[in-house]
Structures are given as C-alpha cells and as structure tokens.
Length: 214
Image (cartoon, rainbow, N blue to C red; front, side, top):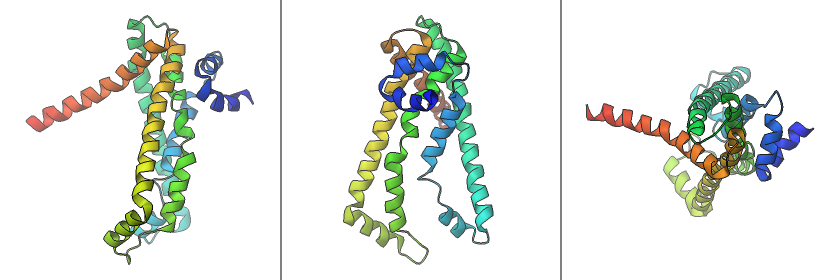
C-alpha cells in the first residue's frame, strides 16, 4: 500500500517520499518510466487509423502491433533513463553529490511521475478527437477548418500549455528527487538535472550542425 501511496506523495512531498523509496531494495525505477511511456501513448496510438492504413489486418493482429509498439517505446524510455543516469551521476559528484548510479537513476525515474498522471488531460483530448474523426471520405482541410472555428484552436492551445506545464513540473520534481539521491541541496539538484538534459541535446545539435555544413 505504501508503494502505491508513493505515486501520489512524490508530487507534493518529493524529498521525503524519495528518501523512503531509496531506502528500499526495489525502487520501481524501470516500472515507473515504462508506465510513463505508456501514458504518453494513449493519445498517439489509434487502432482505427492503423486499420485504415493496413485494411487487411484483423482486430487481434492490430492490437498485437499496438502492444509491440508500446513495448518498444517503453524500452527506449528505459534506455534513455539509463543513459541520463550515467550522465547525471558524475555531474552530481563534481558538485559534491554522493549518490550511486542506481540512486540517481531512481531519482530521475520518479521525476517523470507527472507524466504518469498526464492522462488527466490526455483522455479528454482523445474523447474530443473521436467525436470528429477524419476519414478518407472527409475533406481534411474542411474538417480542420471546422474544428478550429468551433473552439478547436482553444483546445489545441490548452493541450500544448498543459503539456508544457507537465514537462516543467517533471524538471522541478527532478530537482528534488535527484537532490535527495545525491544528498545535496535542491538548488544543486536543479543544476544537476538541467545540465544532464542539456549535454545530450548539445551533442545532438553539434552533430546535426556538423553534418549539414559538410
């Protein structure tokens, strides 16, 4: 029961909850990240659209493909978690942190807990989308214009704002959870998280820029 309670208390008592999690042998790091990846997929995978693209598919094969895609996405999230923990741990140690890679990995994993709760706004978006399906017989441009003129633009803006807020929430929460894992201040935890996110992005941008200038 305490394990399930952590899914909620991590949102408003992050350091206390994170310390309780770190004191356990099983931190649920992989499970939490995998669950978060599933929650982000609820508004991106639609069995009806897949059936339209491949009309010969039956219900069971279609569901099997969707399940496989969800598993692959979840495993990619887990790989990213391990990569980021290997980056964040030495960065934290240079700032005086003492956490192990496993501790930091747990801190990063539980920082995505807001994503687990994101279906609160994702599911209503799905409901609205299913009310206005775009089939091959429908003029896409006319359907989009009709959606926007009937309040769709406001819904889209609201969705983007909520998504941005939840992403920022993850960063703020990560400042607390990583700080607890590294055993230093929350301010250092924030710097640790920001640098951990920025470094891979800088490498990717540098690689893309180098390839484009050749």
